[in-house]
Image (cartoon, rainbow, N blue to C red; front, side):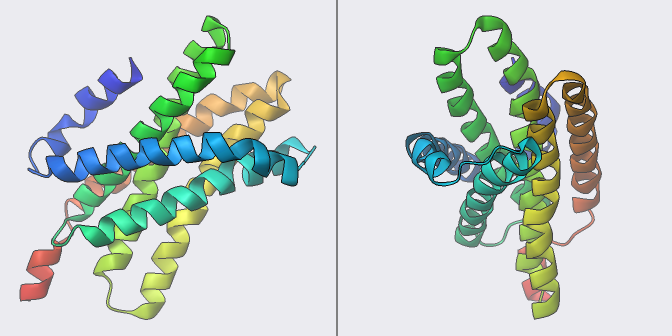
Length: 212
């Protein structure tokens, strides 16, 4: 269901761009990254045993997932020349979609149906939005000529998604009344993504910038 909603909401961006190959490649890359984390996650968790839910949310769930995702998205965007910022965002969103589908598939094998439905409703949009945010700032960094601006936007590509993802996971790991904070955090990430998607339409494409 979240996948269908994603396609319905954002089809106006990716159907008109003619970049289907980029999106399929990004989707498959997200799937491969999810499989890698699922296979290695247990080893990493044993090496970094953390009790505090806030620290676990930001380091175990947020930083480890998002750092690898940002690196993968960075490599993807460098492989696709002459792109627009909006294409970079949607490419990253497809990465998040592939990642979240595989993650939830394996969680479904171990969880009850009620819990997995809740995860699908919340975690799928979270991965899509945070990856989209990362793709936006990585795309802007790619089009920047100033080393200082490139560094600033690359830093934003990891910090802002990490804040959203870390707060979301920390709230769920803390449990009890803190779990109710997860929904507003998700809504805030969706609103943030919508804002940068709208603003991305005003950026020149890489091809136009090379001509100028």
